[in-house]
Image 1 (cartoon, rainbow, N blue to C red):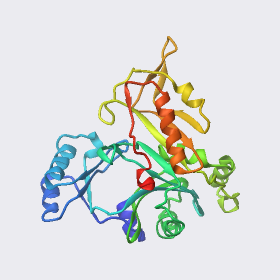
Image 2 (image 1 turned 90 degrees about the horizontal axis):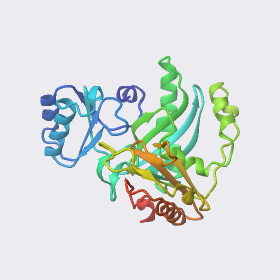
Image 3 (image 1 turned 60 degrees about the vertical axis):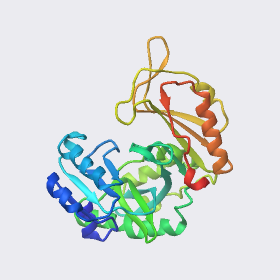
Image 4 (image 1 turned 180 degrees about the horizontal axis):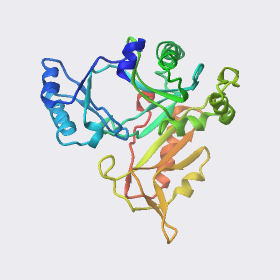
Length: 319
């Protein structure tokens, strides 16, 4: 992806790729932290380490390359320049020729309050995100999405589907952190709570190469929030099997929907945790504060001693 960005002028952080720990550590040299260390492979959204010190960076390099923390995904590492700003997730629908903006949200990657702890697949999200203004949306389309679509076609790989751009909104504008070719989790749950129009015809037109004639996607102005309820031990070794009660009571709330992500029902009819990120408690409201309050009231109605969640989802916008 980084090489593709260089070929097509897509703004992203400067980087180097290494498969040798000694060379990787030497590259850090006199550079100032923080350092961004990434496994060059699929790691379930957990393969990024933000090292605040040189010691942490050296340890991250050893964990990935020597100890194989991420298995085969860590056969190589990418070391990137740290980008200042706020992260945002932006989604575009593509048919190989045309791309239309779909929506944006702000995710919370770190496991614990205050953006502390290890990276996860996402501990919560909210939409709309104040950081993602109309001007940022236009910049993202013109500088990142459309050049990518044109570049994919020019290289013989026209892209059809959902293009998810993980962005850093820097003082110099949006820069690409990563691409995924799917809806995000938990961004998707959040966006779907705000979507008023029918998504199926738009996706069908994208698949048929006729996205230019798609009906306009219509959004509810009300904010939406998702709080991820994860199993104790996540993201390292989540504890499975604990009993969950109270989901129905949370769903009885107006404007609250609980999405199941990692649950199963046992032979006695009990709902049990069966994954890392287990439940997604989503809520909408007249204001972001209202949506946040409703989501956390939904969390409180769920009786699950084996779970945990962040208590500060949407803190950036609310502060």
